[in-house]
Image 1: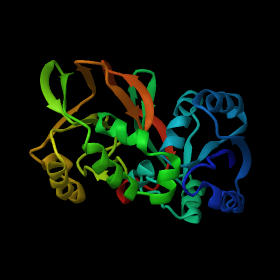
Image 2 (image 1 turned 45 degrees about the vertical axis):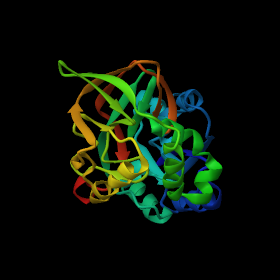
Image 3 (image 1 turned 180 degrees about the vertical axis):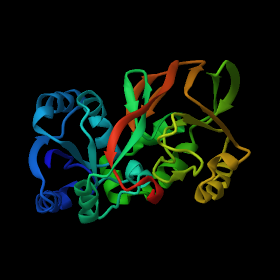
Image 4 (image 1 turned 60 degrees about the vertical axis):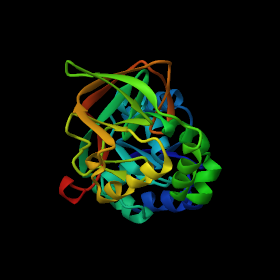
Length: 291
C-alpha cells in the first residue's frame, strides 16, 4: 500500500516514536512518501497533488494533527490511517485504535474501514467536538509544553484554575424549529462519544448523522466536580446540570461574540451554525462491534 505520511514532531509522543512508526509501516509493506506536517492548506495541496500516487494518508499525532488533515482528506477522498501520538487521541479512542504503534499499524495494514461523520462550523471542520465557554480558556492554557509534561492531568489542573475567573454567559439555541435561551458555562457540540480528553457519552455515535449538544450549567468548582461521576460512567447527559440535545444542525448566538474552538483549534466566533456531514470520512479502524 502506498502511504502519504504526515508526522507531527510536536505531538506528545511524536519525537520519541517517529522512527518506530516509520519502520513499523515499512515492515507492514507500506511504501512511504513523507510530507512535512504543516497547515491545513499546505496539507490539502499535498494530498490533492499526490492522490493518484497514494492509496491512503497516515497521520502521526493527536487530534489536532488529524483535524488539520481533514480538508485535504475530504477533497482527495483518500482514507485515513491514524498513529495516535498525541495527548488525548479522542478519535482513536472512539474508533478503538490502539495506542501502541505496532498495533495501530496492524489496523492500517489490514485496511478495514469505517466511514464516519464530520462536523462543520464557520470555515472549520471538527471530528470530535466544537465548543465555546470555559473550554476556550482551557485550550489557550493547554500549550504543547503543558500537554507533553502533564498529559491528561493538564485538563483537570487548568479547568480548576480557569473556573476561578470564568462566569456563565447567555446563549440562544435554535434547532429543528425550536428556540431555547439559557445561561451556560460551557457549550459543546460533539460528533463522537469521546471528546475533551476524558468525557464520554455512550449513547452518542460518530456515524449516526447527528450532533450532540451539551450545556454545562454550573457556576462553581463544587458543581463542576459533581459532574465527574456521570462523566466517568459515560453518561454525561444524565446530570441535572447538563442540558443535552441532539440534532443535525444547531445555531448558537450569544450576547457578545464568543470564540469557538473545533477539536482544540480556533474556529471563529458566535453567531455560528454547527452542521454534520454524514459519512464524509473513511478511516482505517477495527470493525464497529469492537469500538
